[in-house]
Image 1 (tube, rainbow, N blue to C red):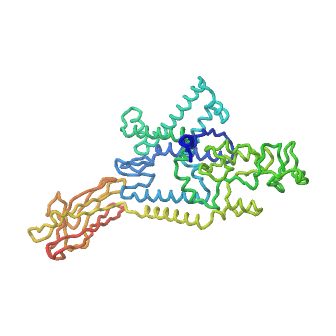
Image 2: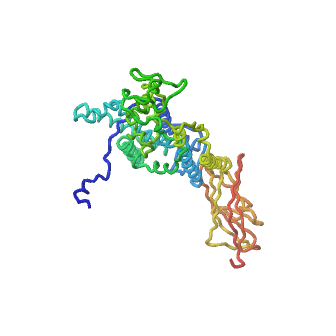
Image 3: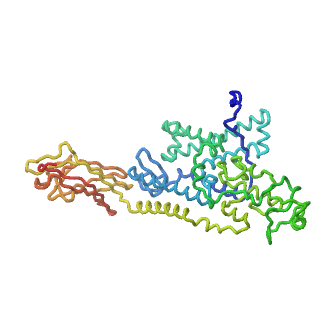
Length: 512
Protein backbone atom coordinates (compact mmCIF):
# COMPACT_ATOMS: atom_id res chain seq x y z
CA UNK A 1 0.00 0.00 0.00
CA UNK A 2 1.32 3.43 -0.98
CA UNK A 3 2.33 5.74 1.84
CA UNK A 4 0.95 9.30 2.12
CA UNK A 5 4.41 10.56 1.11
CA UNK A 6 4.23 8.54 -2.11
CA UNK A 7 0.75 9.83 -2.94
CA UNK A 8 1.92 13.43 -2.66
CA UNK A 9 4.51 12.72 -5.35
CA UNK A 10 1.96 11.41 -7.88
CA UNK A 11 1.38 13.74 -10.85
CA UNK A 12 -2.33 13.70 -11.61
CA UNK A 13 -2.11 16.35 -14.32
CA UNK A 14 0.52 16.82 -16.97
CA UNK A 15 2.18 20.20 -16.86
CA UNK A 16 1.67 22.27 -19.97
CA UNK A 17 4.47 22.11 -22.50
CA UNK A 18 4.47 25.39 -24.36
CA UNK A 19 4.17 24.91 -28.10
CA UNK A 20 6.27 26.93 -30.54
CA UNK A 21 4.99 26.01 -34.03
CA UNK A 22 7.55 26.37 -36.80
CA UNK A 23 6.63 28.32 -39.92
CA UNK A 24 6.09 26.18 -43.01
CA UNK A 25 5.08 26.74 -46.59
CA UNK A 26 3.14 24.32 -48.70
CA UNK A 27 -0.21 23.44 -50.22
CA UNK A 28 -2.13 23.15 -46.97
CA UNK A 29 -0.45 26.15 -45.36
CA UNK A 30 -1.49 28.30 -48.31
CA UNK A 31 -5.01 26.86 -48.07
CA UNK A 32 -5.12 27.84 -44.40
CA UNK A 33 -3.96 31.37 -45.29
CA UNK A 34 -6.74 31.68 -47.85
CA UNK A 35 -9.45 30.41 -45.48
CA UNK A 36 -8.19 32.60 -42.63
CA UNK A 37 -8.24 35.68 -44.87
CA UNK A 38 -11.75 34.86 -46.12
CA UNK A 39 -13.25 34.16 -42.68
CA UNK A 40 -11.69 37.20 -41.01
CA UNK A 41 -12.81 39.42 -43.88
CA UNK A 42 -16.36 38.11 -43.61
CA UNK A 43 -16.41 38.68 -39.86
CA UNK A 44 -14.98 42.19 -39.83
CA UNK A 45 -16.54 43.54 -43.05
CA UNK A 46 -20.09 42.11 -43.00
CA UNK A 47 -21.58 44.69 -40.56
CA UNK A 48 -20.50 47.49 -42.90
CA UNK A 49 -22.25 46.13 -45.98
CA UNK A 50 -25.36 48.05 -47.03
CA UNK A 51 -28.62 46.67 -48.44
CA UNK A 52 -31.45 48.91 -49.66
CA UNK A 53 -34.76 47.82 -48.13
CA UNK A 54 -36.60 51.08 -48.66
CA UNK A 55 -37.16 54.09 -46.45
CA UNK A 56 -38.93 52.21 -43.65
CA UNK A 57 -36.28 49.57 -42.90
CA UNK A 58 -32.60 49.64 -41.90
CA UNK A 59 -30.08 49.48 -44.74
CA UNK A 60 -27.51 47.28 -42.97
CA UNK A 61 -27.14 44.00 -44.86
CA UNK A 62 -26.88 41.78 -41.75
CA UNK A 63 -28.49 43.12 -38.60
CA UNK A 64 -29.83 41.54 -35.41
CA UNK A 65 -32.23 44.31 -34.37
CA UNK A 66 -33.02 43.32 -30.79
CA UNK A 67 -34.86 46.56 -30.02
CA UNK A 68 -37.42 45.92 -32.76
CA UNK A 69 -37.13 42.12 -32.57
CA UNK A 70 -36.01 41.61 -36.15
CA UNK A 71 -33.23 39.70 -37.87
CA UNK A 72 -32.19 41.00 -41.27
CA UNK A 73 -29.95 39.09 -43.67
CA UNK A 74 -29.82 40.81 -47.04
CA UNK A 75 -33.30 40.34 -48.55
CA UNK A 76 -34.50 38.01 -45.78
CA UNK A 77 -36.26 39.34 -42.68
CA UNK A 78 -37.02 37.07 -39.74
CA UNK A 79 -39.63 37.97 -37.12
CA UNK A 80 -39.71 36.52 -33.58
CA UNK A 81 -42.52 34.10 -34.41
CA UNK A 82 -40.37 32.81 -37.32
CA UNK A 83 -37.47 31.78 -35.12
CA UNK A 84 -37.81 28.28 -36.46
CA UNK A 85 -35.79 29.47 -39.46
CA UNK A 86 -32.87 30.18 -37.14
CA UNK A 87 -33.39 26.81 -35.47
CA UNK A 88 -33.34 25.22 -38.92
CA UNK A 89 -30.03 26.91 -39.73
CA UNK A 90 -28.55 25.60 -36.49
CA UNK A 91 -29.75 22.08 -37.28
CA UNK A 92 -28.26 22.39 -40.77
CA UNK A 93 -24.97 23.52 -39.25
CA UNK A 94 -24.90 20.51 -36.94
CA UNK A 95 -25.73 18.02 -39.67
CA UNK A 96 -23.22 19.76 -41.95
CA UNK A 97 -20.53 19.15 -39.34
CA UNK A 98 -21.55 15.49 -39.17
CA UNK A 99 -21.32 15.28 -42.96
CA UNK A 100 -17.91 16.94 -43.13
CA UNK A 101 -16.52 14.87 -40.25
CA UNK A 102 -17.67 11.53 -41.63
CA UNK A 103 -16.24 12.48 -45.04
CA UNK A 104 -13.01 14.39 -44.45
CA UNK A 105 -12.44 14.18 -40.70
CA UNK A 106 -11.88 17.27 -38.59
CA UNK A 107 -11.64 19.69 -41.53
CA UNK A 108 -13.76 22.22 -39.62
CA UNK A 109 -11.31 22.19 -36.70
CA UNK A 110 -8.27 22.45 -38.92
CA UNK A 111 -9.36 25.28 -41.18
CA UNK A 112 -12.53 27.21 -40.30
CA UNK A 113 -13.11 26.96 -36.52
CA UNK A 114 -12.89 30.45 -34.94
CA UNK A 115 -10.46 29.12 -32.33
CA UNK A 116 -8.18 27.84 -35.10
CA UNK A 117 -8.45 31.02 -37.19
CA UNK A 118 -7.72 33.48 -34.38
CA UNK A 119 -5.00 31.28 -32.84
CA UNK A 120 -3.33 31.09 -36.25
CA UNK A 121 -3.48 34.88 -36.47
CA UNK A 122 -1.94 35.33 -33.01
CA UNK A 123 0.80 32.79 -33.76
CA UNK A 124 1.70 34.66 -36.94
CA UNK A 125 1.93 37.95 -35.01
CA UNK A 126 4.21 36.22 -32.51
CA UNK A 127 6.50 35.02 -35.31
CA UNK A 128 6.75 38.51 -36.78
CA UNK A 129 7.79 39.98 -33.42
CA UNK A 130 9.75 37.15 -31.72
CA UNK A 131 11.01 35.24 -34.75
CA UNK A 132 10.42 31.63 -35.79
CA UNK A 133 10.45 28.55 -33.58
CA UNK A 134 14.15 28.50 -32.64
CA UNK A 135 14.22 32.23 -31.92
CA UNK A 136 11.09 31.92 -29.75
CA UNK A 137 12.57 29.03 -27.76
CA UNK A 138 15.80 30.95 -27.27
CA UNK A 139 13.88 34.05 -26.17
CA UNK A 140 11.75 32.00 -23.78
CA UNK A 141 14.84 30.59 -22.07
CA UNK A 142 16.71 33.89 -22.02
CA UNK A 143 16.84 35.90 -18.79
CA UNK A 144 14.55 38.87 -18.48
CA UNK A 145 16.13 41.84 -20.20
CA UNK A 146 15.24 44.99 -22.11
CA UNK A 147 14.89 43.19 -25.44
CA UNK A 148 12.68 40.47 -23.99
CA UNK A 149 10.50 42.97 -22.11
CA UNK A 150 10.14 45.18 -25.19
CA UNK A 151 9.12 42.26 -27.40
CA UNK A 152 6.65 41.01 -24.81
CA UNK A 153 5.03 44.45 -24.51
CA UNK A 154 4.75 44.90 -28.27
CA UNK A 155 3.42 41.39 -28.82
CA UNK A 156 0.75 41.54 -26.14
CA UNK A 157 -0.24 45.05 -27.23
CA UNK A 158 -0.86 43.82 -30.78
CA UNK A 159 -2.75 40.82 -29.43
CA UNK A 160 -4.95 43.13 -27.36
CA UNK A 161 -5.62 45.37 -30.36
CA UNK A 162 -6.76 42.33 -32.37
CA UNK A 163 -8.94 41.23 -29.44
CA UNK A 164 -10.52 44.67 -29.12
CA UNK A 165 -11.22 44.73 -32.87
CA UNK A 166 -12.82 41.30 -32.55
CA UNK A 167 -15.10 42.34 -29.70
CA UNK A 168 -15.85 45.65 -31.38
CA UNK A 169 -16.84 44.02 -34.65
CA UNK A 170 -19.33 41.78 -32.87
CA UNK A 171 -21.43 44.64 -31.45
CA UNK A 172 -21.85 46.13 -34.93
CA UNK A 173 -24.06 43.20 -35.87
CA UNK A 174 -26.67 44.46 -33.36
CA UNK A 175 -27.00 48.13 -34.38
CA UNK A 176 -26.27 50.39 -37.31
CA UNK A 177 -22.48 50.05 -37.58
CA UNK A 178 -21.47 53.65 -38.54
CA UNK A 179 -23.78 55.16 -35.92
CA UNK A 180 -22.65 52.81 -33.17
CA UNK A 181 -18.97 53.33 -34.00
CA UNK A 182 -19.40 57.08 -33.57
CA UNK A 183 -21.15 56.54 -30.25
CA UNK A 184 -18.43 54.16 -29.02
CA UNK A 185 -15.68 56.63 -29.89
CA UNK A 186 -17.35 59.64 -28.26
CA UNK A 187 -18.47 57.70 -25.18
CA UNK A 188 -22.23 57.87 -25.73
CA UNK A 189 -22.83 54.22 -26.65
CA UNK A 190 -25.03 52.07 -24.37
CA UNK A 191 -23.24 50.48 -21.43
CA UNK A 192 -24.01 47.02 -22.76
CA UNK A 193 -21.91 47.80 -25.86
CA UNK A 194 -18.82 48.56 -23.77
CA UNK A 195 -19.46 45.52 -21.58
CA UNK A 196 -19.73 43.27 -24.65
CA UNK A 197 -16.49 44.64 -26.10
CA UNK A 198 -14.73 44.05 -22.76
CA UNK A 199 -15.98 40.47 -22.40
CA UNK A 200 -15.17 39.47 -25.98
CA UNK A 201 -11.80 41.18 -25.82
CA UNK A 202 -10.95 39.16 -22.73
CA UNK A 203 -12.16 35.85 -24.12
CA UNK A 204 -10.44 36.37 -27.49
CA UNK A 205 -7.15 37.31 -25.83
CA UNK A 206 -7.32 34.45 -23.33
CA UNK A 207 -8.45 31.69 -25.70
CA UNK A 208 -6.53 32.69 -28.83
CA UNK A 209 -3.35 34.23 -27.44
CA UNK A 210 -2.77 32.52 -24.09
CA UNK A 211 -4.50 29.11 -23.95
CA UNK A 212 -4.30 28.27 -27.67
CA UNK A 213 -3.96 24.50 -28.09
CA UNK A 214 -5.28 23.91 -24.56
CA UNK A 215 -8.73 24.89 -25.81
CA UNK A 216 -8.67 22.24 -28.54
CA UNK A 217 -7.21 19.49 -26.35
CA UNK A 218 -9.03 20.03 -23.05
CA UNK A 219 -11.85 22.57 -23.29
CA UNK A 220 -13.61 21.83 -26.58
CA UNK A 221 -16.09 18.91 -26.52
CA UNK A 222 -16.15 18.59 -30.31
CA UNK A 223 -13.09 16.26 -30.63
CA UNK A 224 -14.77 13.74 -28.31
CA UNK A 225 -18.01 13.93 -30.29
CA UNK A 226 -16.20 13.51 -33.58
CA UNK A 227 -14.56 10.32 -32.38
CA UNK A 228 -17.97 8.67 -32.54
CA UNK A 229 -18.50 9.85 -36.12
CA UNK A 230 -15.20 8.70 -37.60
CA UNK A 231 -14.85 5.25 -39.07
CA UNK A 232 -12.29 3.32 -41.12
CA UNK A 233 -13.39 5.11 -44.30
CA UNK A 234 -13.13 8.69 -43.01
CA UNK A 235 -10.29 10.83 -44.35
CA UNK A 236 -7.77 11.81 -41.69
CA UNK A 237 -4.20 13.03 -41.57
CA UNK A 238 -2.37 9.73 -41.34
CA UNK A 239 1.23 8.61 -40.96
CA UNK A 240 1.88 5.60 -43.19
CA UNK A 241 3.42 3.07 -40.81
CA UNK A 242 3.90 0.45 -43.51
CA UNK A 243 6.12 2.87 -45.40
CA UNK A 244 7.82 4.89 -42.65
CA UNK A 245 8.86 2.16 -40.21
CA UNK A 246 11.40 1.33 -38.99
CA UNK A 247 12.73 4.85 -38.68
CA UNK A 248 16.31 6.03 -39.04
CA UNK A 249 18.05 8.98 -37.48
CA UNK A 250 19.56 10.71 -40.48
CA UNK A 251 20.65 9.91 -44.00
CA UNK A 252 23.86 8.09 -43.07
CA UNK A 253 21.88 5.09 -41.78
CA UNK A 254 19.78 4.72 -44.89
CA UNK A 255 19.07 1.21 -46.06
CA UNK A 256 16.48 -0.60 -48.26
CA UNK A 257 13.36 1.53 -48.42
CA UNK A 258 10.07 0.23 -47.10
CA UNK A 259 8.47 1.85 -50.13
CA UNK A 260 10.22 1.71 -53.46
CA UNK A 261 8.80 4.00 -56.17
CA UNK A 262 8.67 2.59 -59.62
CA UNK A 263 8.65 3.98 -63.14
CA UNK A 264 8.74 7.75 -63.41
CA UNK A 265 8.47 8.16 -59.64
CA UNK A 266 11.80 6.53 -58.88
CA UNK A 267 13.98 8.95 -56.94
CA UNK A 268 17.66 9.58 -57.52
CA UNK A 269 19.88 8.46 -54.63
CA UNK A 270 21.37 11.19 -52.50
CA UNK A 271 25.09 11.79 -52.49
CA UNK A 272 26.86 9.22 -50.30
CA UNK A 273 23.83 6.89 -50.22
CA UNK A 274 23.63 3.49 -51.89
CA UNK A 275 21.17 3.17 -54.75
CA UNK A 276 18.07 1.01 -54.46
CA UNK A 277 19.58 -1.45 -56.92
CA UNK A 278 22.73 -1.78 -54.78
CA UNK A 279 20.65 -2.31 -51.65
CA UNK A 280 18.51 -4.92 -53.34
CA UNK A 281 21.63 -6.80 -54.50
CA UNK A 282 22.87 -7.28 -50.94
CA UNK A 283 19.82 -7.52 -48.67
CA UNK A 284 21.64 -9.72 -46.19
CA UNK A 285 24.13 -6.96 -45.41
CA UNK A 286 21.73 -4.05 -45.09
CA UNK A 287 18.55 -4.21 -42.97
CA UNK A 288 15.27 -2.87 -44.33
CA UNK A 289 14.47 0.71 -43.22
CA UNK A 290 11.51 3.04 -43.55
CA UNK A 291 11.30 6.45 -45.20
CA UNK A 292 10.94 8.31 -41.88
CA UNK A 293 14.29 9.72 -40.75
CA UNK A 294 12.89 10.83 -37.37
CA UNK A 295 13.61 14.50 -38.06
CA UNK A 296 10.58 15.66 -36.02
CA UNK A 297 9.67 18.23 -38.68
CA UNK A 298 6.04 17.13 -38.41
CA UNK A 299 6.10 17.76 -34.64
CA UNK A 300 7.80 21.15 -34.96
CA UNK A 301 5.05 22.60 -37.20
CA UNK A 302 2.08 21.16 -35.30
CA UNK A 303 0.05 23.93 -33.62
CA UNK A 304 -0.99 21.55 -30.83
CA UNK A 305 2.44 19.95 -30.41
CA UNK A 306 1.45 16.33 -31.05
CA UNK A 307 3.37 13.64 -32.93
CA UNK A 308 1.16 12.40 -35.75
CA UNK A 309 3.28 9.25 -35.99
CA UNK A 310 1.67 8.07 -32.76
CA UNK A 311 -1.67 7.68 -34.55
CA UNK A 312 -5.02 9.46 -34.28
CA UNK A 313 -5.19 11.74 -31.21
CA UNK A 314 -7.61 14.19 -29.68
CA UNK A 315 -5.06 16.96 -30.13
CA UNK A 316 -4.88 16.50 -33.91
CA UNK A 317 -7.03 19.13 -35.64
CA UNK A 318 -6.10 17.80 -39.11
CA UNK A 319 -4.66 21.13 -40.22
CA UNK A 320 -2.27 19.14 -42.46
CA UNK A 321 0.76 21.34 -41.76
CA UNK A 322 2.66 18.16 -40.91
CA UNK A 323 1.99 17.00 -44.48
CA UNK A 324 3.69 20.10 -45.88
CA UNK A 325 6.65 19.68 -43.52
CA UNK A 326 7.11 15.98 -44.25
CA UNK A 327 6.82 16.49 -48.02
CA UNK A 328 9.70 18.97 -47.89
CA UNK A 329 11.86 16.46 -46.04
CA UNK A 330 10.94 13.65 -48.44
CA UNK A 331 11.94 15.87 -51.36
CA UNK A 332 15.34 16.51 -49.75
CA UNK A 333 16.14 12.82 -49.21
CA UNK A 334 14.78 11.69 -52.57
CA UNK A 335 11.73 9.82 -51.33
CA UNK A 336 8.16 10.10 -52.66
CA UNK A 337 5.87 12.63 -50.95
CA UNK A 338 2.92 11.94 -48.69
CA UNK A 339 4.60 9.78 -46.06
CA UNK A 340 2.08 11.75 -44.03
CA UNK A 341 -1.09 12.51 -45.94
CA UNK A 342 -4.86 12.53 -45.98
CA UNK A 343 -5.92 8.91 -46.06
CA UNK A 344 -8.31 6.42 -44.45
CA UNK A 345 -7.61 3.48 -42.18
CA UNK A 346 -9.03 1.15 -44.80
CA UNK A 347 -6.87 2.59 -47.60
CA UNK A 348 -3.71 2.29 -45.51
CA UNK A 349 -4.50 -1.31 -44.66
CA UNK A 350 -4.99 -2.11 -48.35
CA UNK A 351 -1.84 -0.21 -49.33
CA UNK A 352 0.19 -1.97 -46.64
CA UNK A 353 -0.92 -5.29 -48.08
CA UNK A 354 0.15 -4.21 -51.56
CA UNK A 355 -3.37 -3.52 -52.86
CA UNK A 356 -4.87 -0.55 -54.68
CA UNK A 357 -7.03 1.81 -52.54
CA UNK A 358 -10.51 2.74 -53.77
CA UNK A 359 -10.99 6.05 -55.65
CA UNK A 360 -11.71 9.10 -53.49
CA UNK A 361 -15.23 9.51 -54.92
CA UNK A 362 -16.12 6.01 -53.75
CA UNK A 363 -15.06 6.86 -50.21
CA UNK A 364 -17.38 9.85 -50.19
CA UNK A 365 -20.41 8.21 -51.82
CA UNK A 366 -21.41 5.76 -49.12
CA UNK A 367 -24.60 5.21 -47.18
CA UNK A 368 -23.59 7.27 -44.18
CA UNK A 369 -22.53 10.40 -46.05
CA UNK A 370 -25.42 10.18 -48.51
CA UNK A 371 -27.94 10.05 -45.65
CA UNK A 372 -26.32 13.05 -43.94
CA UNK A 373 -26.40 14.97 -47.21
CA UNK A 374 -30.03 14.11 -47.96
CA UNK A 375 -31.16 15.22 -44.49
CA UNK A 376 -29.08 18.41 -44.71
CA UNK A 377 -30.34 19.25 -48.21
CA UNK A 378 -33.93 18.37 -47.29
CA UNK A 379 -33.96 20.81 -44.39
CA UNK A 380 -32.40 23.51 -46.56
CA UNK A 381 -34.86 23.04 -49.42
CA UNK A 382 -37.77 22.97 -46.97
CA UNK A 383 -36.67 26.28 -45.46
CA UNK A 384 -36.23 27.85 -48.90
CA UNK A 385 -39.72 26.72 -49.88
CA UNK A 386 -41.18 28.10 -46.65
CA UNK A 387 -39.39 31.42 -47.18
CA UNK A 388 -40.65 31.67 -50.74
CA UNK A 389 -44.28 30.92 -49.89
CA UNK A 390 -44.67 32.60 -46.50
CA UNK A 391 -47.30 35.30 -46.12
CA UNK A 392 -46.21 38.79 -45.18
CA UNK A 393 -49.41 39.28 -43.20
CA UNK A 394 -50.36 37.64 -39.95
CA UNK A 395 -53.42 38.03 -37.74
CA UNK A 396 -54.19 37.08 -34.17
CA UNK A 397 -57.76 37.27 -32.80
CA UNK A 398 -58.72 36.95 -29.17
CA UNK A 399 -62.31 37.15 -27.93
CA UNK A 400 -62.97 39.43 -24.98
CA UNK A 401 -64.43 37.19 -22.26
CA UNK A 402 -65.71 39.83 -19.87
CA UNK A 403 -68.51 40.07 -20.75
CA UNK A 404 -68.90 37.09 -23.05
CA UNK A 405 -71.58 38.88 -25.03
CA UNK A 406 -73.93 41.88 -24.85
CA UNK A 407 -77.56 41.96 -26.00
CA UNK A 408 -78.26 45.20 -27.84
CA UNK A 409 -81.53 47.18 -27.77
CA UNK A 410 -82.72 45.66 -31.06
CA UNK A 411 -82.08 42.13 -29.81
CA UNK A 412 -78.83 41.59 -31.71
CA UNK A 413 -75.95 39.96 -29.89
CA UNK A 414 -72.58 41.68 -29.72
CA UNK A 415 -69.19 40.06 -29.13
CA UNK A 416 -65.92 41.95 -28.67
CA UNK A 417 -62.54 40.93 -30.09
CA UNK A 418 -58.96 42.17 -29.91
CA UNK A 419 -57.39 41.90 -33.35
CA UNK A 420 -53.64 42.15 -33.95
CA UNK A 421 -52.43 42.39 -37.54
CA UNK A 422 -48.74 41.98 -38.22
CA UNK A 423 -47.40 43.78 -41.30
CA UNK A 424 -44.13 42.10 -42.24
CA UNK A 425 -43.43 44.34 -45.22
CA UNK A 426 -41.00 47.26 -45.20
CA UNK A 427 -43.77 49.73 -46.09
CA UNK A 428 -47.16 50.76 -44.67
CA UNK A 429 -50.14 48.70 -45.77
CA UNK A 430 -53.91 49.08 -45.61
CA UNK A 431 -55.85 45.93 -44.80
CA UNK A 432 -59.51 44.95 -44.65
CA UNK A 433 -60.81 42.96 -41.69
CA UNK A 434 -63.94 40.85 -42.19
CA UNK A 435 -65.75 37.96 -40.51
CA UNK A 436 -66.51 34.78 -42.40
CA UNK A 437 -69.21 32.14 -41.68
CA UNK A 438 -71.41 34.45 -39.57
CA UNK A 439 -74.70 35.36 -41.29
CA UNK A 440 -75.78 39.03 -41.32
CA UNK A 441 -72.83 40.09 -39.21
CA UNK A 442 -71.76 43.72 -38.95
CA UNK A 443 -68.70 45.17 -37.25
CA UNK A 444 -67.21 48.46 -36.06
CA UNK A 445 -64.21 49.60 -34.09
CA UNK A 446 -64.37 50.37 -30.38
CA UNK A 447 -63.52 53.99 -31.10
CA UNK A 448 -66.53 54.31 -33.44
CA UNK A 449 -70.26 53.64 -33.07
CA UNK A 450 -72.78 51.12 -34.31
CA UNK A 451 -74.08 53.68 -36.78
CA UNK A 452 -70.77 53.15 -38.63
CA UNK A 453 -71.16 49.37 -38.65
CA UNK A 454 -70.37 47.60 -41.92
CA UNK A 455 -69.49 44.15 -43.16
CA UNK A 456 -65.77 44.99 -42.84
CA UNK A 457 -63.42 47.64 -41.49
CA UNK A 458 -60.16 49.01 -42.78
CA UNK A 459 -56.96 49.41 -40.81
CA UNK A 460 -53.68 51.06 -41.81
CA UNK A 461 -50.55 49.46 -40.37
CA UNK A 462 -47.10 51.02 -40.32
CA UNK A 463 -44.12 49.33 -41.93
CA UNK A 464 -42.74 46.39 -39.97
CA UNK A 465 -45.24 46.93 -37.18
CA UNK A 466 -48.14 45.20 -35.47
CA UNK A 467 -51.45 47.05 -35.74
CA UNK A 468 -53.89 46.49 -32.87
CA UNK A 469 -57.57 47.33 -32.68
CA UNK A 470 -60.62 46.29 -30.65
CA UNK A 471 -63.69 45.53 -32.70
CA UNK A 472 -67.34 44.76 -31.98
CA UNK A 473 -69.22 42.18 -34.05
CA UNK A 474 -73.02 42.08 -33.96
CA UNK A 475 -75.23 39.27 -35.33
CA UNK A 476 -78.85 38.13 -35.01
CA UNK A 477 -79.71 36.23 -31.82
CA UNK A 478 -80.89 33.19 -33.75
CA UNK A 479 -78.22 30.55 -33.98
CA UNK A 480 -75.98 28.27 -31.98
CA UNK A 481 -74.80 29.17 -28.53
CA UNK A 482 -71.22 29.07 -29.80
CA UNK A 483 -70.58 29.39 -33.50
CA UNK A 484 -67.12 29.00 -35.04
CA UNK A 485 -66.07 31.91 -37.20
CA UNK A 486 -63.01 33.04 -39.14
CA UNK A 487 -61.55 36.53 -39.06
CA UNK A 488 -60.00 37.28 -42.46
CA UNK A 489 -57.48 40.04 -43.11
CA UNK A 490 -56.84 41.02 -46.74
CA UNK A 491 -54.19 43.45 -47.95
CA UNK A 492 -55.67 46.07 -50.26
CA UNK A 493 -52.48 46.98 -52.12
CA UNK A 494 -51.33 45.57 -55.44
CA UNK A 495 -49.32 42.73 -53.89
CA UNK A 496 -52.36 41.51 -51.95
CA UNK A 497 -52.22 38.58 -49.58
CA UNK A 498 -54.42 37.49 -46.71
CA UNK A 499 -54.26 35.93 -43.26
CA UNK A 500 -56.93 34.03 -41.32
CA UNK A 501 -57.41 33.27 -37.65
CA UNK A 502 -60.21 31.30 -36.05
CA UNK A 503 -62.39 32.33 -33.15
CA UNK A 504 -66.06 31.94 -32.17
CA UNK A 505 -69.21 33.98 -31.68
CA UNK A 506 -71.29 33.43 -28.53
CA UNK A 507 -75.02 33.88 -27.92
CA UNK A 508 -77.30 33.21 -24.97
CA UNK A 509 -79.00 29.86 -25.22
CA UNK A 510 -78.01 26.26 -24.82
CA UNK A 511 -75.58 25.30 -22.10
CA UNK A 512 -71.92 25.09 -23.01
